[in-house]
Length: 189
Ligand code: SF4
Image (cartoon, rainbow, N blue to C red; front, side):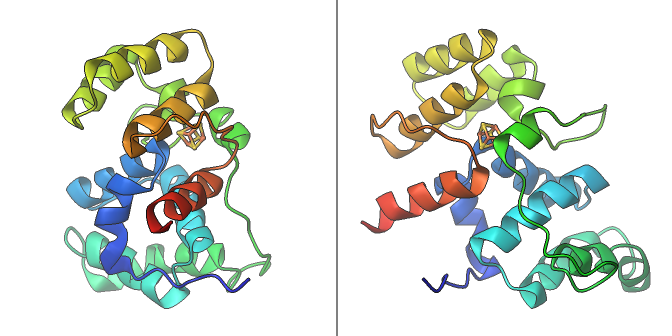
């Protein structure tokens, strides 16, 4: 099947409706900080490629944010390469695939990083406050945090999916791009 092209103008809406929390967190960080460390750029950049954002749009997306805090020349020299690299246009020209949940969950996340899986890498209290801030009902938040504390990160993610879409599907989530596709299927019907 031919995948639809996703214009970057739709990402703010999609990040709320159809992104798993790991990607929503990265998107919001980029929008507020206008910067992102390498681990996050890799995780989010490959996800964007996977959902159908073109290379041209990806370059524009990162450039528009980064040039809010740096000049264009610096962006082109230090960051544009990585964007093209993710699309297999630089370096070894491999076709890099977006990361699976397992890879993201097992990734090393340091201070100041915002990549990784929030169910695995966020402090539960911060996670709880964030979910409440997003407008989730308290029972759903309670359930998600409870499962998170037991170490069942992907099940917590599935609960997040259900709470976000107001359904009770209990999907097995093993890939952020699978999460996105399931969500789009549900929304578009
Ligand atoms: Fe992302 Fe997977 Fe974690 Fe869900 S379980 S937040 S899709 S890494």
